[in-house]
Length: 123
Image (cartoon, rainbow, N blue to C red; front, top):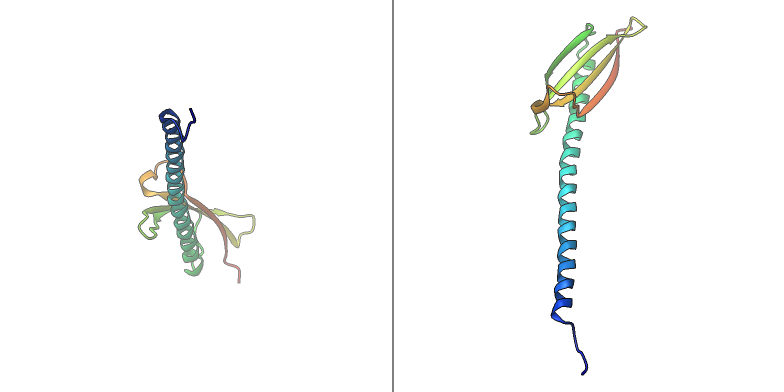
């Protein structure tokens, strides 16, 4: 007797393999979407740090040493910018480190962005 086509078992095995492959590809696509959201948040955090540093640079004020923090929201993200101002060996320069944290995780050490700039009061 000549066999034409596949048996029911062979067809079910083939469908099972295809289903497993589709589930794996959907899981990978979901992971990519989560990574893209985190990348977008980090990008906005970097812009917030840059805006904060630019504000300090253009304000014309030579900041005192110390630490402070403030809200630096960007788009729909709620951020907190923590600023540390330090002396340098040259008295005319200050080292300013801006770190951006998610407002929901502000108490943790998890930072989204970090920017270091130097300000001068030299004529």
